[in-house]
Image (cartoon, rainbow, N blue to C red; front, side):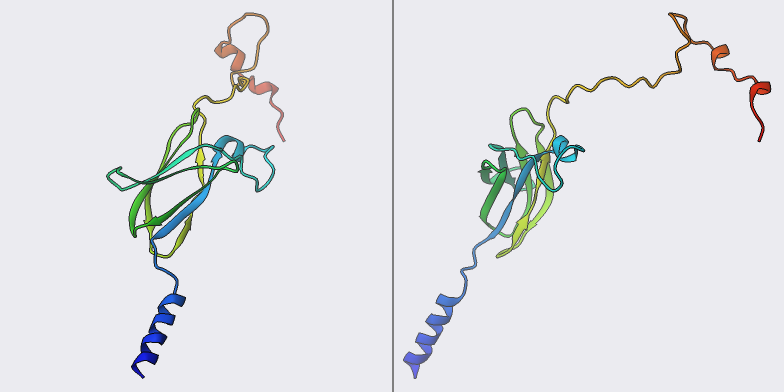
Length: 153
């Protein structure tokens, strides 16, 4: 009987999943391309080769990963606790996400968006007053509306 109980306990332990730490996985994308109107819906503009570092709240590194060709990363066997996640890539501003709670045996999915260091050139928008013609500066008289010329309903 004692052998049977020992054997049953061993089989139960072998069948149970090993309780490792938690896991964080996700994707790193270009924030401007993600928000652009010409981006295909639901498709992330991935950043391959971005470095993702898990840190303690005191900014001590715990784990690190580099994104693959599809911008995906995975950090595993993380002890339960509070962390920060830092994403960095050349030509992009670093991004730090705080207050990440990792629980043992759980998987967190966290996608990160990085802004480029240099914003794309955008043509200027003329938001000034209407042109009066030539090089003449705009004056208050140009902005004055004669009440006699306003139509009444």
